[in-house]
Length: 217
Image (cartoon, rainbow, N blue to C red; front, side):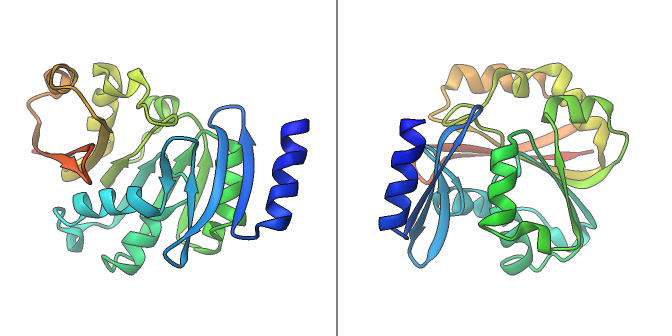
């Protein structure tokens, strides 16, 4: 209660900052940087800012002219929608899955994500969603962090078998695989990628991110 009061007080006197608290993501902050809003946790950028540039590096390697449907697992504040619309000229359907209701609220309230009528927002756990959903997509974007860590289940064989099932033949998967990911951890993950995927890896994107781009063959 005291912390919430303090953050509201700080927001009042500093309109460049707003604070939220989530049971999942803990402390969340809206801050203006280089003329635009960003969403941050205590230790990392969650949406817009550096994270958006990381995802842009991966999206630039994917031929989006053939993409008609996109699934985003880990929607966050929705910066990937902004990139797809305004940088890569993709104007098709987007389904965004986000487990944290506070982050979902921020996406709507602070970034007006609900105003894009071709974006469907779903509050759900990504692992549960892919295990039950039968839709297929041309591009699946996976950007799931709790603060600076990708939860362990999103490296698992079970999860990636479901992802493979949901991506169309010749479709793509863009996976923000981690920050400061060890070589051992990356090799363990690559061992679960089955033969129906070909992939390329971009190391040290903006110094510390590992981005994996996969295509189903």
